[in-house]
Image 1 (cartoon, one colour):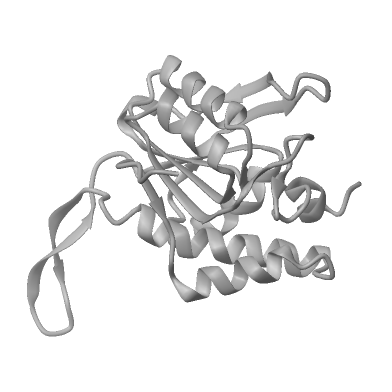
Image 2 (cartoon, one colour):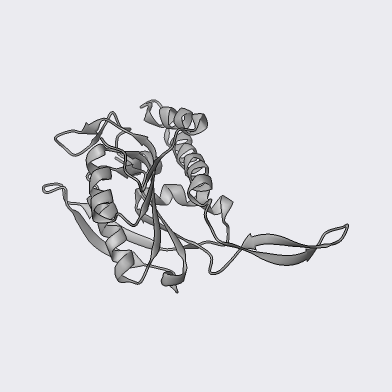
Amino acid sequence: MEALDNVIIMDHPLIQHKISMLRDKATGTNEFRSLVSEIAMLMAYEALRDLPTEEVEIETPIEKCMTPFISGKKMAVVPILRAGLGMVDGILKLVPTAKVGHIGLYRDPETHEPQEYYCKLPSPIELRTILVTDPMLATGGSGSDAIRMIKEHGGKKIKFMCIIAAPEGLEKLHRDHPDVQIYVGHLDRELNENAYICPGLGDAGDRIFGTK
């Protein structure tokens, strides 16, 4: 697919190595969960490089000085339930003061279209940098709908972060929300007839939470 100006595809060796471990069907729930958290932390480091800062005076053991702190309202992490929850802890290790919202969507097994069942966002959402998380960007329906819901609640500066994406989902998200920066751990080959990413890693929610 052609390069998209609001899409950043990660190429860091540590991220790629950990994604390869995620893909392995022999990777158990505990290790899978830890890897998702670690990958989210590594990706968030890059995704948050443009957070605004302001100079604040502090006193070191040597002297007083002006030094940068993150400014304004702290950011919000908004996982798409339920798999997106697996990425939250890794991000909070970097930004422990971030607020956490939740968006509940499920995929209709017949139409593969997302259905909304929950939305709770920290206030004031319009003043925050918002990082939406979902390990898998397949058709793009859930990600696009989640961002639409956040915008309807007043969210403005929105970033989307996924570990694995299919070209179809990435193109849809870009088309629906060209103003949103999209961070992708790895761009996979395609969706199959059941709308699963290939080669993918299976159902991320099931593997994070140990369910079938």
